[in-house]
Length: 190
Image (cartoon, rainbow, N blue to C red; front, side):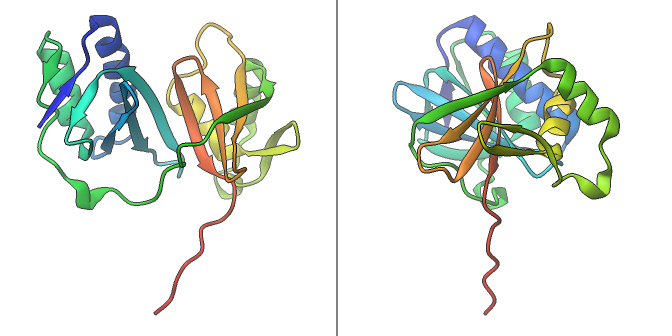
């Protein structure tokens, strides 16, 4: 198994996102997927939203889940384009991912508003609408996840986008994003 990210700056950016995920949940897993000429990284958070980022490179196998702490160690210790991301723990990934669809930016949330939402957030009301942008309801849990990851930095605004099929919403923060399914998941009883 290998993760190849040729540029040191891209490896450092991946390591930064993984470190933020590990800080929130030391037992987190990360899913790595080939995406065109790059690799996409996905991780769950304690806020029931996903974190994603991407970098030029490749992963073999093309879709694998590893422990976030193992990947962080590999990216932090090995200063080389190719690293071993750790053993596969594919059975630990729960949930789906957005399809290969385009994203449409529908608005922005000022960074000060993220701080205000977090300050007034009620743990029992994380699904309450915290912000609305372009007709898209942004639940408080998304703003809390942005802050939990230590974003936005430098007062940058957070862009709100929806997937081409309308099923997913994302808060874009430069090279990373918080992603949430817009429709509730259905439970299948057998």
